Length: 105
Length: 237
Image 1 (cartoon, each protein chain N blue to C red):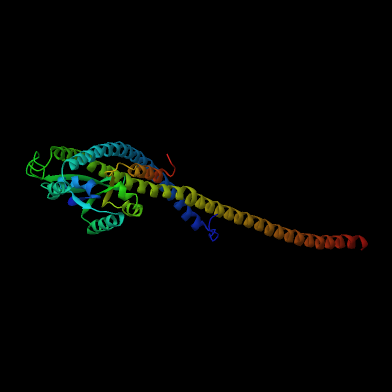
Image 2 (spheres, one colour; image 1 turned 45 degrees about the vertical axis):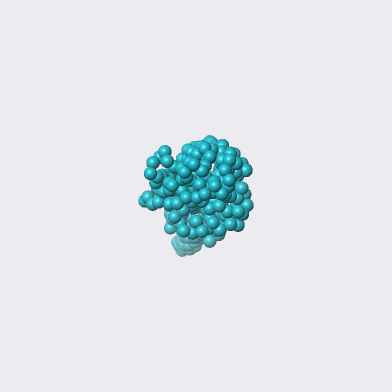
């Protein structure tokens, strides 16, 4: 089973513009609500494999991350935005360990 | 505490013993699965951690490069330069099975005329810094894809481990003790019934014996009486 999927980058214009040059689909958004809409549309189509989302937006959208966490597609991967990393991506790894082990390691 | 409506019958006992065996085997298997998954998961997590810190670091340098580029160019020019991509990326996803967890494996093909020519703009109107930035981003992108793969794998595995852990605990702390308790209850009830039957039989036997003895005593008394009367009459006569 090998099908082709799209890769999307959602974030503020400055953070995602570079990805456009690589041929990714970029969705420059200005606020969390817009990002939520964009992700929902992308997930609904079902042919989007990976969504790169900036942490600056992700911090206001924990429910969205939770919603797609256990799905194979799309994989929402956090990347640091232009203002630097907020440590959410690292924190999520810690959270998934906690979830698996049952205790905080 | 097992449910209180267990029939203390031999058939129920056999059924429960079978259930207990199945539960214990399932428990052992699930425990093995959990341990193996955990091992794989921790390896994956270690990979995610190092990859993520690398990606984050490199992306920050890329962002810096873009910042420099945007400082040297007007934002309109920058936007225009990047507006229409020359290369396009196609992501191929297959799945790999790790201990019954389907994790994604990504592979991507870039469709571009030549590797050296990924810049979607002419060099005349743009600054050199933009080339550097795009180039750096192209390098980090490969890692980002790998990161997506392992991070998703870690997420899916953590979910599976959680489920397995719950199952193991349910078997270990609920199903197996309950079944054992029920088996003990039935065994004791059956033993009790056995003892009750034995005592009842002994009692009945006692009663029968007593009756027989009384009977015999009565007959003996009659016989003694008859004997003494026949022994006395000849001496008188």
